[in-house]
Length: 450
Image 1 (cartoon, rainbow, N blue to C red):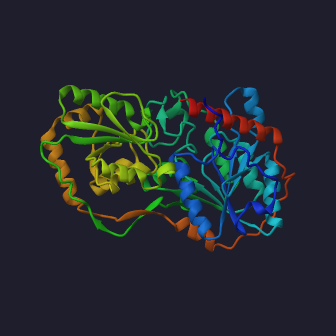
Image 2 (image 1 turned 120 degrees about the vertical axis):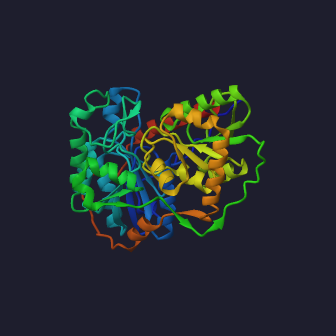
C-alpha cells in the first residue's frame, strides 16, 4: 500500500525573522519558479552561484511568482504573490509591499542588500517587477538564460517551429507569428529603464550578447559576457581504444524536447536502424522517453552531482553527441559536458552558441539541415575520418570546468549600499502558503504514481 509522499519543504514556511539568513549580507534573485530541486540550466546556475556566494559570506534570497494555470480568475489573484526562499528555505508568499517590508526588516536587522538579480520574468507581472526596481534602489544585474526579455517566445521560434532570426522584434518581422505581442518589448524596456544607471546585463556568451543587444542597443554599453563555467587545469584526453568494426555510439543529451532536436534524433534512430547495426543510440537524461532502439541512461545533476553527465558519457564511451537545438542557445551546459567527455558534436547553424563554439573550436560538424545530417551519418568512412581528426586536434583538454567566480567575487567585494526600503507588513499570506503546499503535495503524489 502506497503512503502519501513526504513533500520536500512543504511545511517549512516560517515567520519573518532576521534569523532567516546565515550571513550579514544578501542578494535578491527574481526567477520564474521555485528554484529548489529543479534540473534545468537556470536552476543549475542559481545553485552553483549560491554555493560560491555562501563561501564569501553572502546569502541568497529568491523570489518567484505563485505558479497557477487552473483559471484566469485564480491567476489574476495569485500572480501578485511572490514566494520567498531564503537560504534554501521557503518563508511564504508575499505581495509586493510585503516583499519590501521583508527587505526593510532585513536592513533594520543589520543585513545589507548587495544587489537585485533578474533571472527570468516568466509568470511575473512586469508592472510589479518595474515597481520593485523603482522603489528598491539597489544595484541590478540582469542575467540572460534565454531570450524571454526579447520575446515571449523565449526560444525565438516563429509559431513555435523555426528560428525567426536575430533581428529585433517588429510588426514587419513578427506579424505572422502567433506569439507577436505588440507592447511587450516596450513593457520589458520600462522594467529595464526602472534600473537605468545601476543596471548591468550579463550574457553567458558572445552569441547571447549579440542577439540581445540587437533588441536593446541602448543597453549595449552595460552588457558584458561572463561564461557560466571556466576551464581549470589541463590533461590528456584518453585514447578511445575502439576497434574499426565496433558500432559508433551516438547520443542525445538532456530533455527530449522538439526544439532540442528530439524528433530529428528519433528519425536518425529509425533510418540508421533499418540500414544496419553500425550505430548504437543513447539518451542521457532524467526522464526515460518512449522510443525503441534507444538505450536510456538516467542522469540528474541534482541527484548525482554537477559532473554526472560528463561521467555518464565517458563511461558509455560515447563518440558523437547530437546537439540539434533549433533555437539559438545562449550557453548550453550540455555542450560543455559533451566537450569534457571527449565526444564530437553534431549541430545545425541555428543552435546559437553551440554552432559558434563548434566552428571556433573545431569541436565537430555544423550540418545545414536534417536531410544533410542523414546523408552525413550514412557515410561511415567520412565519420571515422572526422572522428580521428577531432581526437588529434583535442588530444589535450581542460582537467575540469569550474563555476565562474567572477560575479560572486564582484558582489562580495562591493560595499553594500545600506538601503532600508519602506514596505508593508512582512507577514506572509497563510492562505496562499497553504495553497502552495497543497500544490506541492499533489505534484509529489503524481510523481510517485507515475
